[in-house]
Length: 122
Length: 438
Image 1 (cartoon, rainbow over the protein chains, first blue to last red):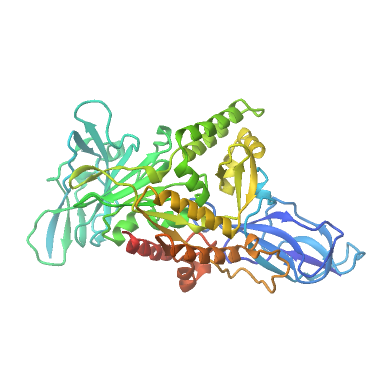
Image 2 (image 1 turned 180 degrees about the horizontal axis):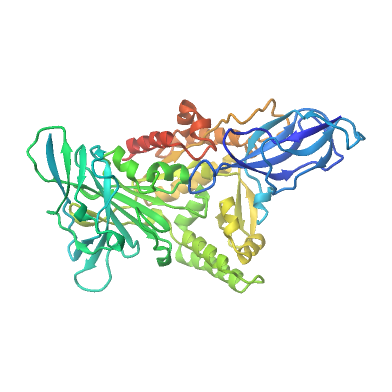
């Protein structure tokens, strides 16, 4: 079966969520606890301040899967709930199978690191 | 009921003629005003009686008097005090302390006696004379803004904020003009807020800025000049703006600056700061270090987009990322405190960090490399908060406990990104800062 990697709901406020880093390559076998992606969340539209309120988050897998495909590139905006990758529980699951459900993940607030898309200038 | 006339407070500066613009009323006629509420403002222009343009606020260009109500009552503004158009912006009229500018209808029966308005002075150092634009309270792009009560009977102490927007919001308020601060207290403190629009004001940057002499700055400036203007990438106007602000940020430390202020005693020069506000949020786990000159800087991520191509090429070629640890951050704080306290009799106020988040659903920590503070933002925040408490044993530090305030009133609602607070939370932080002013 195929599973979706969905952007978790991080806030009730309008937010610009951007894919900052992708970790595994398509085809990779992913153990429980695999780090999948880092995202940033910008709440500028709700908090008028002098600098944008941006926080960073890491998505970590809570099940064993294979990564089949990424659907977003680093730097792309992805709304809450958007499917950013396809996962499967076998390596050869047909790519046109229906998505069974979202994969179980956990989300952690992380510190900024230079590998993020946002920091690519330096 | 009684009707109390409102007049301007005396504003004398020997050697200068004080001119004012028309008065801009912030509330409509008939509005109920609380005592100490800022109800109007005007721009101030100082004319040097000896001729020429020299005046103590020449670099700051904008000098304003925000006028606070001396008592509670219903406002009856004199419409003749506003001229409209540019005349409410330009200093066209002599400051006359006998002039009646309006009335307050109060509930109490009292003999009408002209009540002097309370002057809260505002000024700001413009990044460049080109940034002298706009109208309203503190218009323009400032690298530093200042505020104080003009009727202070003695020379006020200076509270200097070198913090990020987590302190700027509580200090400068919704209109960025210190209104909430004045209205919330009778503090006689001279408040200075460094804008830090480009560089994150972390401990290592602030210490280097404090210790940097002119020759060290000239080396940095020469390197930037060579890289941007004689480098492989043709600079654009964005490069000029960006490195201009960068050089301005690196040039001098606000800790070393004294300021002219107008008080009831006339023109006075302030002492070095008695208290300095810092943000623990500025202490991130990575920083840039120049490969040959070895100075550090951290540019706000969102400001990279404003850099021109030559600046980006210079940053890529000339800097390396350096990881920081909790121990190295503590060391950076100690170096900063030792350097500053060796020359300045000040205490520090540090806003700590929100150390939890409802957005996390961590079930286990195994996926994250140790030390966890290098990766997990809220572990880093907890460890930095603990480290600040350790520092209080050795250094004169007051901690503004953002973590507990947010936990008490609700982080999700009042501190949605962990840095930018709601109005209610800002008022609590403001009250805490006011209590800690020396």
